Image (cartoon, rainbow, N blue to C red; front, side, top):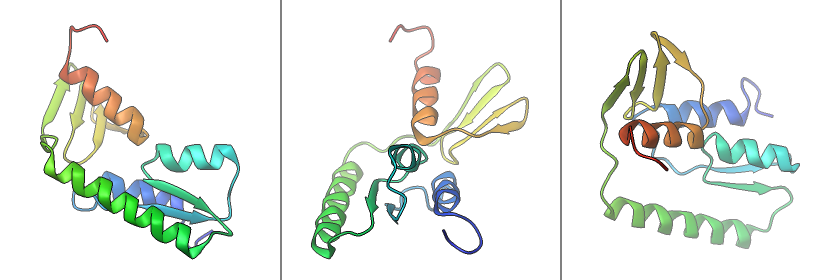
Length: 125
């Protein structure tokens, strides 16, 4: 319900940009339907809090998110590489997928799954 674009689009833009993709995002919203929450999390939000919310709960969720992010940074970072399978190109650094040069819109989960499968071609999962 932002004036120029909605929060989902802001999240999508931030997560698709190499310079901002690691920024933790907590969506604070009045939209509390199950589908709204699922969509918000699938496009890359790290947490989703519906209004009204307790400031103490928001603070606790923020601290938990920052702890999780700090633990991930100490692990082996995901290599930023270009994966090509025929006419499909996956740019892991830019979170961008193209087919025949045309960008494909994917959720964060879909992107990560596609990247994993492309990195492990020929294996059964």
